[in-house]
Structure formats: C-alpha cells, structure tokens
Length: 487
Image (cartoon, rainbow, N blue to C red; front, side, top):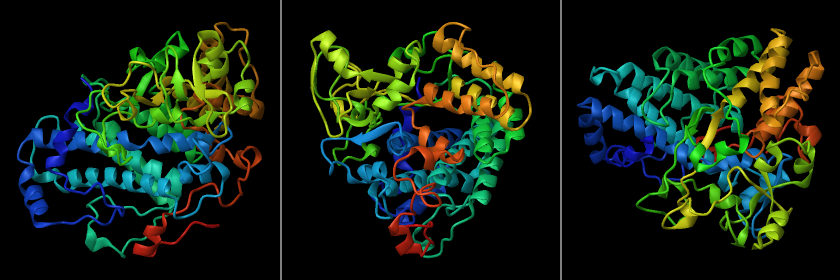
C-alpha cells in the first residue's frame, strides 16, 4: 500500500491554508490552536501527521522540470512564448524575483518544513512503540525540503523547533547555506540512527534512503571522503534492473533499483483546476511532458513542455540503450505507428520518454491524475555519486571505475564500453555518465552548477548570479530578506 492513501487525514489537523502565498502567513486561529492542543493523543495521530509531512513531496513537479529546463538538456516548449512565463524565463536565464514558479517552490518546501516542525513541537506529548523510527521519517523529510531550498536559493531562513505563523512576519533572516547544510546533515544522521532498513509500505523512508541523501548532501559540499563513506553503506543493498527502460513504466515502480520514490495515485477523489498540485495525489508534472493533440497508440496528449534538445539525443552512443528510453523521437514514432500530434513552441521532435503521459495510466480527469511515481533516488545515481566521491576525494579510482562501469554495463549490455581512465579524465567521464543515466529526471542543472560547468554549457548563464535563483520578491517585501547577487 502506497503512503499517499492516508494523506487526506492531515487536513483535519494542519490548518495551514494552501492558498496562502506567503509561507509566513499562516493564521493561528482559535480553532487551529484547539486542534493542535488536543490532537496528539494516540500513536495513530502521530502516524497521520507524519504521512501528511510526505504530502508536499507530491506537489514539487516544478523542481523536477526546472532541473532540466534550466540546463542544456531541454527547452521550455509549451504552446507559445507566453505559456507559463516563469518557466520560459528560467529557460532563457531571464528570470527575476517575481517569478511565480520559483515562489511556488519556496512555498511548498516551507509547507513541508512547517509540517515537520509541527511534529517536532509535539514530540514529547506521548511515548509509544515505533516513535523513534517515525521521527526518523520526519527528520529525513525536513532535510529533503531544506536541501531543495538550499539548492535553489542558497542562503534561506532556517527554523527547526517551531512552525512559522503570522507573528513571524518581518522577523526572518537568511541563514548561510553552510549553516543550513549543517542542519540537513544533523537531521539525516538522526534519521539514519532511527530508521529501519526495510519497510512494509511503499514510499516510506528507509535507513538506506537517508544514507543516500546524506551522501548527496556531502557531495554538493565537496565533502568527498564523507560522501564515499556513507554511500558505501548503500552499495550492494539494491540492484540495477536489467532493462533500463522498464523502471520508468508503471510496472517498474518501487522496484529493485528504487531507493526513494515520491508516490502518486491515479485514483484521486478530487482535483483542482486552479493549476495547483495540492488538488490531486496524481503526478501533475507528467501532463507537461507529452505531445500536444496526440492521436495514436502507447502515449497520451500533453502540453509539450520540457522538450529534449537534438544535441542531448545525439550525445548518446547509438548503442546506448538509455538514449531511446530517455528521449522519444516522436517524429520517427509517429511515422512508424500512424500517429499524429501538434507541434508546440520550440518543437524539437523529442519528448521526455521517462515521464511522458502514457495511455491508460490516468483515471478520471486525465490531465491532473497520472499515478506515475517520481524516482527521486535510484541506485544508479548512488553508484555514480559513490564513483565521483571516491575519485574526487582521492579515496579509490579503482572503486570509482567499478561503480561507473556497473552502470555502463547495464546500458550497453557488455564490458566493451568500460572506462579505465583515472584522475581528472575519470572525473569527466563520471560527470558525462550522470547525464547519460539521469537525463530528464531533474538533476542536470544542479550537477552543472555544483561541478562548475554551468557557465560553459548553458546559454545565458551568468557566473556569480545564476548558480542560485532569486529569493521570491514577496519574501523580500514581507521580511526584508536580502536578495541574491545579480537580482
């Protein structure tokens, strides 16, 4: 049973209006205070609150889209140059502080943090069996949300002991990214100490997922030795699926390669046509990636955003099975299958094959209700992170080659494409492999930034500015937060 099944329960206890545009603008009305005071009376209450803390993970489709649209992997696309202006600006590197899409990311992440802190506030009210493991999930989730924030915005307000309310308006300050990272590390170490290695419910966090995320957090800070050490705990605990493409089908969800997946359902009972993902448990990002006006087998219509470039398609070796699994050549498919579609803005002929709308995978209101999970951390990613940490940290190029080649052997089906390089040449090979393996999964922009390659490959990227996105203007106005350089 997927974890989203109980998320609706959280509405009874988390009266933090989803329509609020400022994360500090929660109204601690009298009825909310009464609910908060009396709610945590049983272990089931804590369980429901933790499940609700997973909920904002389902909303964060923009984080994934932007990870490729802001990079060299894809173009924004859509219907026209004015279709979702915020994404168009990010694609062109002309975004600014009033970008609605960036404001949404800020708001959703802090909603998740507020929910985690709600549990932190009430931690001592009741003792029960399994409480430590439950709070391990809370600390993982808070770390996850803060990691997204620090990746996007750099220095951000940090709070861990309480929820923000209207009384906090105008009082917040940004904490340095290094301080935020330190808290993320603390939360993940606490999670690792408490979490089990296996769970009975798909989507729940495990000790290995927390170790994988901590390894990534270390890697983003160039703490290579620490990253290699913690990721070693995850090596061998999962296996790569033999057929690369199969893991992105509905039948491949929560499989042997899945370290952590954000769960979605195609059976939601309500939807929100206000274009907010809070109105569905489905994956709202999927519809963005499909071809417009599609008629034919296998796939379904979408909104033609996030279209892969021809350069990305051509960068693959033609024998690499990941190319066609990652990028759909729609022109070739349409010709071979008597299918038709409408070309969108910035049409390249290619679509995101990993997260494309597929026929029969959405019930009721198709656009808002795809049940496709987001594969947040795959074992292949862990192997490549471990390879990089071992190589760049001077720990072991032999291990780095081993982990890199495990991924490549699955891709090519042989050992003829093994990498034997060492040193900086091996580093370059690992970085290239990350995109061959993880293209169109939302990682590319952040990989380019953390490795210092962004200015060389992203058109319009300004060094010293575009490594982070602007702090939302409403937070500048409300709390007088300082703005990132260049914005």
